[in-house]
Amino acid sequence: MQSKLVSFIQVLRSHDVRVSPAETLDAMAVATTLGYANRDLLRDGLAMTLAKTPAEEAVFLTCFDRYFYQRLSDFSRAQELADDSSRPETGETGNEPGEGAAAAGDAAPLAAAAAADADIAALLASPLMQSLVDNDRNELTVAIGRAAEQVGLRQIQLFTQKGQFTRRILDAMGEEQLRSAVIELERQESPALAELQRYRDILREEVRNYVEREYLLHAEGRTRQFMDEVLSKTRLNNIEHMYLHKVHELVRKMARKLASRYSRKRRQVKRGQLNMAKTIRKGIANDGVMFNTYWRQVRKEKPQILAVCDVSGSVAAYAKFLLLFLYSLQDVLPKVRSFAFSSHLGEVSSYFDDYPVEKAIELVNWKYGGATDYGSSLQDFARLALDDINSNTTVIILGDARNNNGDPRLDLMQNIYQRSRQVIWLNPESRRVWGSGDSEMLRYQSACHFSAECNNLKQLERIVEQLLKSTH
Image 1 (tube, rainbow, N blue to C red):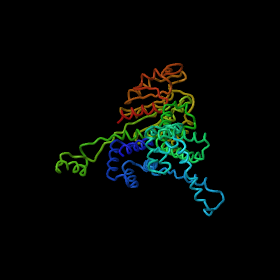
Image 2 (cartoon, rainbow, N blue to C red):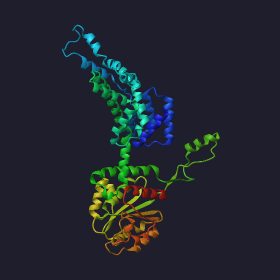
Image 3 (cartoon, helix red, strand yellow):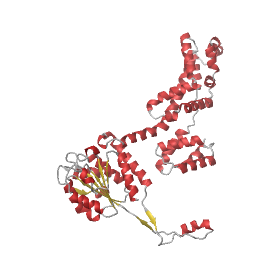
């Protein structure tokens, strides 16, 4: 059961429920304490241990119901269908003389076929067929689960694999022998054919349903993760409009992950108001002697981030997602000022305070879009923010550095470089074309602490994570 619990936790992780190794051990302790007899009690105990938010609790309950599915396979329908087909069509219910004997004679066509054919007799003696005939629901359910484990059904990832795994499970259960017997009875035109076909069809239906449930449980999360991985590695300007909402969700998910990993930096000081509760609690290990004192006052370090985005036509899509990403990181980077430019530059931080993020980005592109002039834009930036740049400031510039053969104002970039903690330039173009045509990237590179090609979300996440490491 511990292996089943570990597998269940893997299912939760594939559905974006965060479960740490320590929480896995806690869940095992809860399951050991509560036991597995009371399903509802186990569900509530594990939910309190593994689900941290209402959204995670909803996902947990859905996954729990699917994973610990209780309904047993029921093959009694085969006998019911056989009885219905053999019942006379007169509409009477047992008043005809000799009806019971006739029914009894029709109720054992398989036995008659087995007496005449050794292969049919061997089939009826097999454990699978015995369970089908006796409607041994426990044994049949266990047999399906055992066969699924044998063929590795939990590794299913794509909906196109459902048919493959259904066939593998049936083969592992010995359905091939049943299939061969059906072919032989069909060749002989035996009256036992219809009854055996019903057993075969219902067995296949139960296995298909089992595979469908396991696909929804194990593959649904993996498929979503696979799609997220594909989108995160796709150039942002190649993503079709129909996938933009998925990209927005992916950006927010990446931001939440980084936000949970990098909290605001706090530094404990050795003066201020004494934290008596913590001081006494820490002294318990020393028989109440307070060797160490702890203080309530903390000092918050708030690094300042200045994001400068080129929103001209060639890089507008990239700027949109960088602005969205930085907007989603407000809790981690509390002092973020955003600027947008093409021919001129302006601060757009207030747009994110006054409008929803999508509307704000639309307004930024409308107001500042146009032909690119890096020299004029750097002049505007120096006028608006140069005096605020200090050794605690990180400047992020997103642009292709194509200046339409204008003055690049490298002197202003050098001034920004000297004042700031670090200057990061993210260029959506390939490194191979830096410096070609009207690109000033190689010259601007000399005034940057770090420059990188960045045209997809995976690269953006990696660079922003490095930024967070350096500012915390």
